[in-house]
Amino acid sequence: MTEAAELPPAPEQAREVFGDRFADAVRYAELLAEAGVQRGLIGPREVPRLWERHILNCAVLSEAVPEGVTVCDVGSGAGLPGIPLALVREDLNITLLEPLLRRTNFLTEVVELLGLDHVTVVRGRAEEVLGKLAPVHVVTARAVAPLDRLATWGIPLLRPYGEMLALKGDTAEEELKASATALSKLGAVETSILQVGEGIVDPLSTVVRVEVGESPGGVRFAAKRAKAARTGRVRRRR
Image (tube, rainbow, N blue to C red; front, side, top):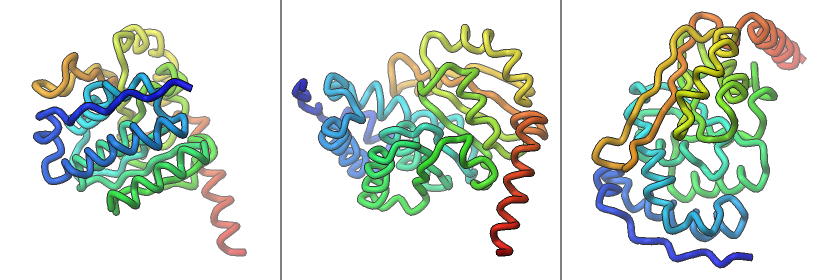
């Protein structure tokens, strides 16, 4: 087992980004560097760059999220980008969706420890919770899969005219072009690439934005949602 490196002090940019929640952001970084590494959620070699590459890189996603909306962080893992986003934006109602028990246990502990009352942890896969979770305004994700596959999981969870915001790297433009047909079938009506985090992170964080129309996920997923809703109503009557 590789020994984890020491967590560096929080950069000054973190104070600017997190404001009154700065101490909570520091505690989250410590939890990632300690329990996160011990439980295999974060690689030990990532500890020296937790702030710049992970926490701040995710926190600046808030620049692209509208005020007061509902958010589902798909494949939340160790809480990236959902936890940094929650620390910056208390106006958001955020669901951290993650299928693995050891990760949801960690997320639940973090949410309780930091007093994130506007955050809910749900264990499950996106395709399993379709029709069970209320559709959201925004789906977020970070490097959990290629864009076309990620869209298949995330877009059906959106409400009409919602948007998916995916943190991507240098391959963002290439992935977007390769996924054009798949995105169209899933109900996407507009796509764009944003650069966020000016003056906070270098390089800037790259975000792929996929906006949907009145049928998120397309016809096939509309039928699935309707079936899930009917099943839920039958169960409640029983």
